[in-house]
Image 1 (cartoon, helix red, strand yellow):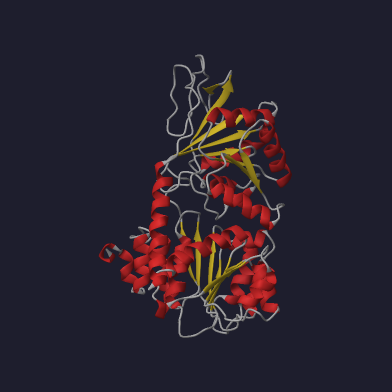
Image 2 (cartoon, one colour):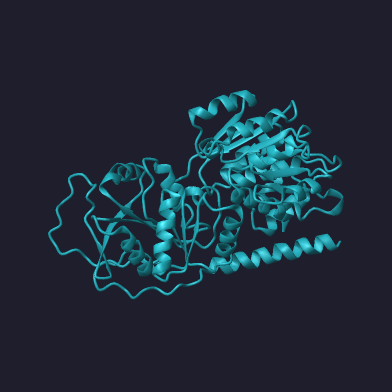
Amino acid sequence: MSSKSNFERFQLKPFIIEALNEQRFFMPTEIQERLIPAIISGKDVIGQSQTGSGKTMAFLIPVIERVDVTKEEVQAVITAPTRELAAQIFTELEKIIGFAEEAEQITAKLMVGGTDRLRTIEKLKTQPHIVVGTPGRILDLVKEQALKVHTSELFVVDEADQMLDMGFIEEVDQIAARMGEELQMLVFSATVPEKLQPFLRKYMNNPRHVQVDPQQTTAEKIDHYLLPSRHRDKMKLIIEVAKQYNPYFAIIFANTKEQVDEVADAMLQAGLNVERIHGGLNPRQRKQVMKVVNSAKVQYLVATDLAARGIDIKGVTHIINYELPKNDSDWYVHRVGRSARAGESGVALSIYEEQDESIIQKLMDRKIKFTFVDMKDGEWVELENKFKRRVRKATTKPAVVTITRNDQPNTGGKAKAKPKPVKPGYKKRARFAQEKIEQKMRRKRKK
């Protein structure tokens, strides 16, 4: 089976190839192709790409390859801006190192806030080879002298622009300053803002900067719709939209945690199966929400942009923007990127107001094609695109249009009945693949 893998060209440890084959990763993505050899050879790198480019594996594979299991010391530190993203990276790491034989077993620890600090310190009597975590908790353990990072010469900073936005760069800087003199820095980010440059110049030596532009701004199988609020009660409108779609699983985005709470409360009162996630929840609450979401026990998740970057929530069929992001068109791309993953289709609908016209124009300039719609008497109606220059005025009655997860707009005739929630086939396939991986890992441990 390993002969199928194009990853063999990188001369990786056999168990890494085996793990990748088991997850059906045979062909490196562009960012993996361009960065894995550079990282293995010891170069500093900046990987600039949008979500879904395969950048997590672009740093995990070479980091695992570089670990020397004969040394019981920290050899790589991987930081992420949120607990959820750190946990996700750690899960992907475990899927690979779980295939190692006993003689080449790599140890790893997840270190995030919201967990028992004293228990974590107790477990650090033996230092792990790889540390994954949030900057605050890692720095805390370093200052306590429980975690010894001075032996590590590999430092990964994931979602660096978000680290900057959330005020974590100073903590990342303090961790880096305590690491080995020959530090190899791997920075991954969707954007590289000017304010990040002093940090990069401080620690990076002639880095290999690879920017991977997506072939298109958003996934090919997402249908984008715009719905004008027209001074209506937006809370009633969002509930009507949610009921009309009746999705398998939808994420509804708002710009502030206060707005998320208002929308989630209104949807609960309307009898909808809904959860919420934002930075105002404590770690235990956020962990519980993600557990419910990942077990497919909820139909709607109302979220701030915390859920749009990095976190891989599977089975998202619909993205509904209660509010469009303010000014920054990249956030729209991050939001809708939660849907239509792994070749599946998806729907993205945004409720917009007059002040949103500038960001809509920016998105259209990025080649995103919108269909303008409205809801009248429980039916979807297609509208004229008011943003097109020199458009011909509509002279006929607006066509009725139905929008479901798998359908293209269907002009003419009445809107179809509400689609029943249908479990996507890929959910079943993903679970089957995960079970196979876990079985294989259990067999390895028994040996």
